[in-house]
Length: 73
Image 1 (cartoon, rainbow, N blue to C red):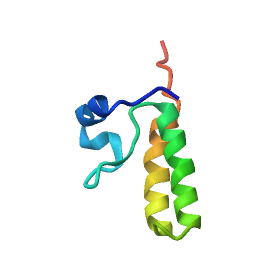
Image 2: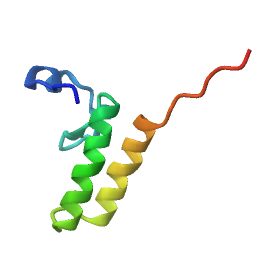
Image 3: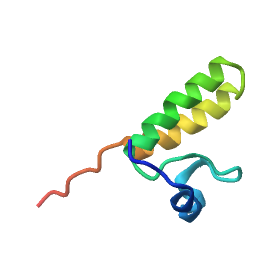
């Protein structure tokens, strides 16, 4: 996973976070999206976040992880 520095994290737009209001679970790339899914699952199992929040994070991560469709000629 690429390193996300504090400076780079501050430059991210709110839409690049799974939870934009609290700026948690940044997803600037696929590796961070996969990591966000793993951390969300871990936090849900520890009862630190709700199942609904985990599902919201997973949905956002899946959008980042989904391969882009190739254009037909």
